[in-house]
Length: 328
Image (cartoon, rainbow, N blue to C red):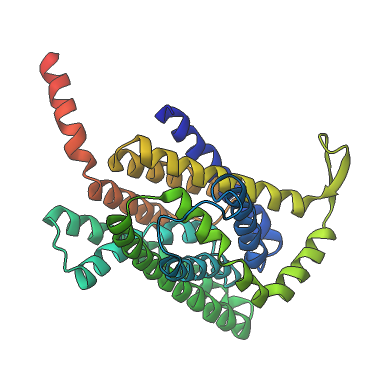
């Protein structure tokens, strides 16, 4: 498959997925569980039919290892979405999740005893600084609401701190899952499609823990205003439409990233994903009018420069630039 097609899927799926997620959480900030459940259910059903062939296809990786990976994946997905309940703006949510490089490097040093080049440490320092700037400015915005009510502002700030704690936990848990997955792939070979299916299929019973919350939000979604869907020929509640589109675009996003990792180098994947995050961030700020100060822009720029430095983009473009200058 042509890499351009995969890049198109990533930009179309991942960017639009963030848009529909923000449309959902703006009206119902606590809808993280029903969104996560919808995504898991759709990807699990698709994998059950086309990947696992209704569980008749032999597994390449033992089920016991999948249970460990699935537990981590489920916790990361639920915590990341549920953090939006705690006064976390969507731009900060996106920027914070860009700090996965930090968590991966820290755990790589601690668990795998890895050592990195100086440029990698510089890049991680830049990412950390950028996230700190954005988080600090976000904290100031929450604290500035004290002019209305001290009790309300204290409660909002406490919620914000819980949200930041949840994002931090999910960040390191995701990095730990990545290391575990890397170990499995070295031992049993790369089976990304199989892992994608079991990561979404096995956790489905765990959503029974959130059944009442999912049911209540389902009722709230059904009571939202109606919108006409030409293909269906009848109106449906707009929140169900947003959820349906979020689930579909999540699938397109995941498939696009999977194709990209098999067709392109890791550098290309990093560049595409980084650029996609930047475009999603810009769209969220402009279209949804999310508060974003000058210092937020500074922090965001530092995060992306650090990410590109980690990917050693400059080493790739330097010879090309030198060759072009020489030709001129």
